[in-house]
Structures are given as C-alpha cells and as structure tokens.
Length: 258
Image (cartoon, rainbow, N blue to C red; front, side):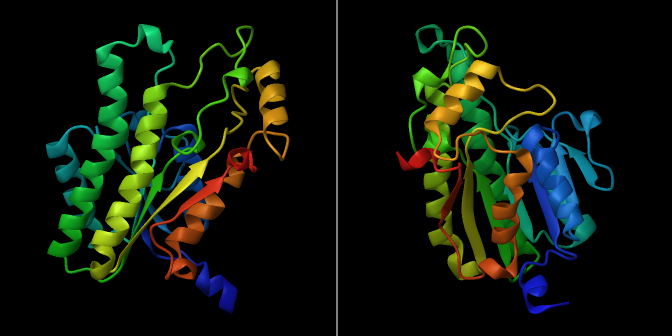
C-alpha cells in the first residue's frame, strides 16, 4: 500500500452510519464499504436498505434506551467502533406560520437529541472497552451556517421552503461538534462535521426551476452530485485527519461564501 493509500485507508475500520437508508446515508455506507471498512448501518427502516454487504440494525435515535442497546450490541459484536457518522436527520417544510409543536419537537428530537444520544452511548462504550482512538463525524448543513435563500424556492416545482427549525438544529450540530472536540480530545476521539449543500436526487430530481435558481445562487452553478459528499467524510475518518478536530467542512460548491 502506498503512502497516500495508507493515509486515507479505512481498511478494517468499524464504521457506524446512522440514517443509513436515506439518500446520503446509503451513499456514505457504500463509500466506506468500497474503502475497505466494516460498515454498520442503523436506521428506523432497515428493510429499505439499498447497500449490500453491510450490517444493519433497526434504531430510533430518539429512544435513549434503544440507542444504548443497539450500540452495545454493535460493540459486543465488533469489539470496537472506530468511526461514528451521525447522519440521521429530518426536516419539516410547512410555512413557519403553520408550524405545529409536534413537528417542531420531532425535528429537534431526531436532529439534536438523537445525535447527542448516539455520541453519549458511543463515548461510554469507548471508555468501557478501553479504546484508544476514535472519530465522530456529524452531518451538518449549509443551512446551519447561512439562511436559506427564499428566492431559490418556487411555487411551481419546489414550494417546500427549508425550515427555521432544521437550520437551527444543524447550527446546533455544528456547535455540538466543537464542544465534543474539546471535551473528548484527551480520550483520543476526534469530532468533526461535514456540511453539504443541496444534493441533487437522481431518483427523484428537484424541479427544473429550483435547480436553475440554486445554480444561479451557487458559485459552481449547480447542485452537488451525491458522490461528491463522501470524500470529506472519508478524509475525516482516516488517519490523514489525525490532527483535525472541531472543524466543519463545507461541501457546498461555494454556496456559503456569499
């Protein structure tokens, strides 16, 4: 194995990806699998798995007892978790004037509380199993850094404007990343975030007007291709990032620059 291959290698690392069945989750699972990792995908809907060759566990990350049980089972089977990717996330799209308390709480619970529960369970097991090195990668969003540009959204083909609560939770994820990077450094756990921009869905593409407006707003003049996101995640999981912690890598085609 060459110097660079060794630096970026994920061979035999045990990687846990939450929200593994969704668009980005499935892409991340596939990328880690191709990089030689042992991949464990957790999601509420494991029956909809799109990636062969990975281990799957059913998990509601808002249920603390369930998180502890599933992570305990994974650790008991593999004896370690090298990388935790907190990818699970949800949003709501109704106008904020019509926001229900139930929808508000749902987004908060999955995106923030669920991420915290997974980090908490992982760290406690990390200590119990006396592990020496680990990496936590939280999936943020450009909308945790900038506000959505309402001019991008159209009533004709994309009336569902990104919500205030989604952006607030993703900003919280980025701040939580910094918090845990500081508090877990002495234990040998690095904590970073990757914040994607808008990702084109090849199976159900966003409307033409939306894509055109988004491209006008983005310096690279287009939405991200789904295969353009995993590179940053694999970098943070690898030994190449051994001195990188507390960072939020924007993979957004420059969208957040202006």
